[in-house]
Figure 1 (tube, rainbow, N blue to C red):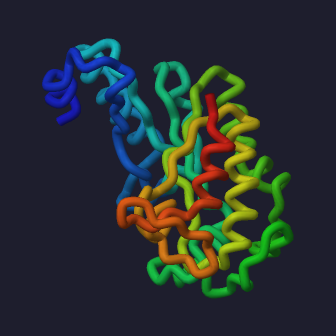
Figure 2: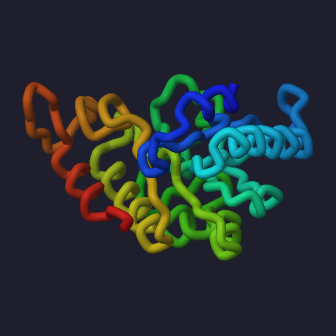
Amino acid sequence: LWATWARRYRGIPAAELEFDLVNEPPPVGRYEMTREGHEALMRRTVAAIREADPDRPITVDGLNAGNIPLPELADLDLRQSCRGYAPMAISHYGASWVSHILADAPTPKWPGLEWQGRRWDRQTLLDHYQPWRHLADAGVTIHAGECGCYNQTPNEVALAWLSDLFATYQDLGWGYALWQFRGPFGIADHGRAGARIETVHGIDIDRDLLELFLACRVS
């Protein structure tokens, strides 16, 4: 499949198209997946793409839904993609599809949330990304392929947490992307109570979140 796409889109500039091979691979052991099997499949797929289109940029997501980096693939000149949802007691507060994970989560606060044996603040965020920082130090380009905060987290908490998260990425020099431009994790039409909204061409824009996003751009 990837070899077919590589042939189909060969010639499109690298700056305009990049391949991300598998979105959020599962933890090792689920669906009988092994780390060795995952590595072998990624190497085979990268080789097939580069045979068809040698200059196509390629990204691989970390294991366990983008949370565990892949130093075993560091020699392949790939980008590796992490996630920006830690702690989920902030980012996914009130999200029904992870209610089993957040059953014991306290009311959101930032900084100072105490959950799963840790007191979360900006330093804890930096510590959380230490394994990815090791990979970056080895020359691998890291990108936070998804981040964001669900609309049930109180607005002041969401902005405080996102401010520290974006600033962390900015300090590390990692690019990042919100999961959704428009919707409950996004800048537009998210429906979070208390946000400073400006309507532009019929779309409700969170002005504070937009300004924060722009201020923390990574060059």
